Image (cartoon, rainbow, N blue to C red; front, side, top):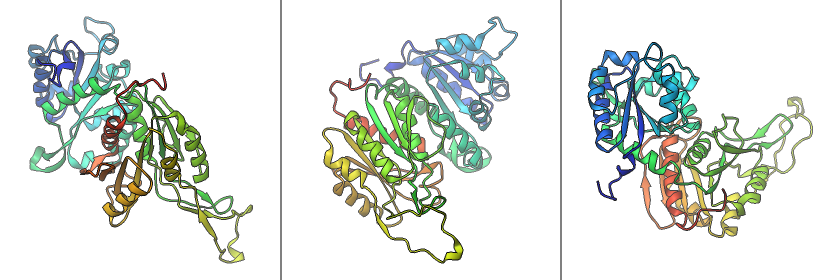
Length: 410
C-alpha cells in the first residue's frame, strides 16, 4: 500500500459494518472483504432481517472477528456499548428505509440501532431501496434529520433494481462505499480550525404586523451546508430565518429581515474564513411597514418598495482573504445570470439552480446545480440530495482556502 493509496487511512481502523434486511445485503460481503483487505479491523453486525438474505457465517469467515447479531443473551452483556465506544467508523450497507426511520427516531431495538446510538464515531449510511421508497417524503425527511446530525451518506446510485425496475435507490457499488468510508476518515476534520458562516432561509420583509413580502425558501440547503461543515470540523455560524432542527455543533443566529441578516453577517465577517450565502434574501422591502393590520375594507394598499441591503456586494467589497460563495436561484438563463452574479459580487464560487424545477430548489430535499467559479470553470451536477450537494460545495470551499495555518478559531 503506497502513500498515495486513498484507502491507506483505513489501515488499523476499527469499523463496525452494519447489514440490514434488503436484497442488496449480499453486496455487503464484498464491502467487508475490501475493508479487511485495506487493513481495517471489521466487526459485522447483522440485523435479524439481514439473516433472510445473508448468513452471519459468511461475514465471520471474512471479517476480523465473528459477526454479531444479538443485543441480548450473548457473551457480552453490553455489546452495543463496547462496539460504539471502540469504533472509529460505523458503516451501514445496505441502509433500508426501515433502518433510516428507526435511526432518525432514536430507536434502539436491536444490536445495530443500539450501537448507532451508543457511538460518537462518524457514521456512513449506504441507502438501498426501491425508487418510490427513496423518493417518499418520509424517507427524505429521515435522511434530512440524520444528515443534520452529522451522518454521512454514500449513494444511492441509479440503476437496475429488484423486480426489473430502473431508477435511483440502488446500493452504491462496494468499492464506492469503501472509498467513501476512507473519505469520511480522511476528511471528517478537513475543515478543522476553520470558521465558516452560512446563511439559510428566505427573509421576510414586513408589510404590517401580520403580513410580509417573502419567498418559498425553506432553509434546507443552508442548514445542510451548516451540518456538513460542522461534521467536517469547522466552527460554524448559521444565520437563518428557518425553524429547522439545529445541526449538531452549529451556532445559530435567528433573523427575520434582510436588514437583520446583513447586520448579523457583516458584523461577523472579519472573524470567519468563508461565507456561504445560501439564503434567499429579498431584493426589495416596503419603505414603511404599517403599525396596525391593514384592513380589507380600507381598499387595496399601495406598496412603495425600496432595495434591501446587498449583503454579497458588501462582503465582496470588504473581503480580505475570505472565501465567498453565493447562490443564484433562477427561473431562466441560469448560466448567464449566475456568471453575471459571480463577477458583479466578486465571488469565488456561485451555486446556480433552476428553482422552477419541481425536484430542485425551494421546499424539497434535492437540488440540481451548476457550479461556476472565478477561474472560469463550470461543473454541472446531477440531481442530488441537498446534503450531498453541500458536501460538494464544501469540497470546493476547502480547496479555495489557503493551505497555511488553520488557527483562527480553536
